Length: 258
Image 1 (cartoon, helix red, strand yellow):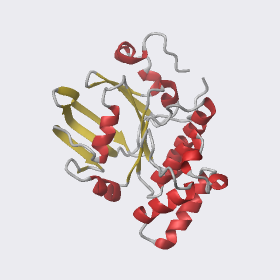
Image 2 (spheres, one colour):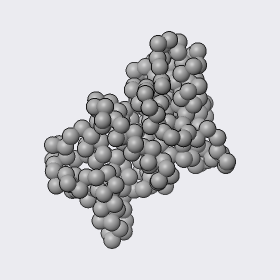
Image 3 (cartoon, one colour):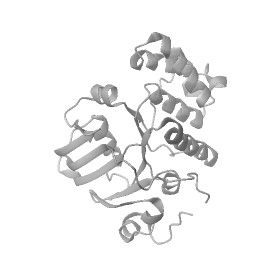
Image 4 (cartoon, one colour):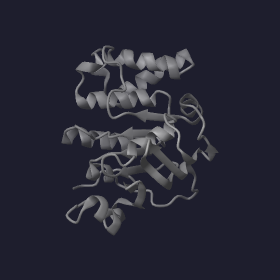
């Protein structure tokens, strides 16, 4: 498999963690989901999360956005403790954008009307709204489908639409939940190129969780494996697939990356 990413950020001249989890634990009732986990996502990095179903990947996104709060531990964004901050404050103050696995758009509105509706919420300056919309339509090559209702768009067009909606507010951090799920090979390659370009051209820090391990590893700088409520391995893609703990818990012996 040819690598999508031409370079990987393995070290940073100035290390600045934009997301940090310190001793985070979370349970749903009597079921432990995350057990004292610690990790950092550095500014400008593309970071990946892998693991079996139900291991807590989407839960981590919900913790970052503030949809849920941990039982124990501290969540920091840009060095500031945001553990008790509401969703709107994390979005506005810290510029966190989120692309859900399903939905994320108004089904009966056109693609253009979706962009207009969200722009009225996230862009205060009326004069800048259309400018930003035009920029995103051009960036994602969506001009020719802008007047089509979102529910009639193809899978790839819907994914572009939702990412464009998340980018309206010019986020510094973009969370992508299962972004490669149920997409064909060409659409996945298109999406991979979009993700890498967002890092290179827009300097956005990106965090991806997915079950498509090869597709995820092709674009990330670093990734971690979650299993049994813990982080069992974290490294660059080439090192991660060789890690014995990662092999035993997730990849297996036959997994090939490139």
